[in-house]
Image (cartoon, rainbow, N blue to C red; front, side, top):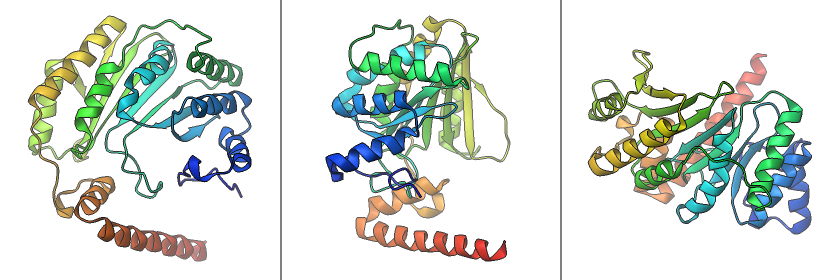
Length: 286
């Protein structure tokens, strides 16, 4: 069983130098290129929270508001390359993912299924971090970082993804949790439709996703800036305040944590017990 590579985050500062060496190898999952990248990010004080080095590899970072220039330096070239993806989650992640689950995250990765290509891509990113490679830049993610800053603490239920396809197309996915009769849905649908986004129709689902597609990176950069500026200047959606209003487990956890850290700690302990009991019961039924 893996000592360090599991679903819960481990604070790197809690590891000794020898433990960190062992952990880095486990997190790299046998990829020397991923291990080099993780060490490079660590040396540059960029906090990672997850990684995967297999097919469609990615690296997840703890998003820190004072490092936007550093993120753009690394991620702009990544997203400018074909077969890449960027994901930003202002509300954080899974409450079972560790003590800092509620902090916003930034993830970037490759959509490649070719091992040689993946290793080359990871080494290029390491070269960018180390200022040894100057890669072409077509996409500017700074507006999305500004939008993430704005939405932190608002429990908006939103997250965004930018994808650069192997066919050189660009897609901007804007996702959020809304009921169709809510003010939040009407606001986002009106705003994004105005900027030529298409809503993926899946009636009854609370997860709503709007997509903007283009073959021109200049059009992508413009819509990133325009959508960000309009949301920052007009957004007035109040976050859910009761557990009954929460549309996701993440929202519910935020509401309880905002109300009382002590209450949250007790709640998450009970939730983990329920999960462990369900796992054990499932084993007996097999």
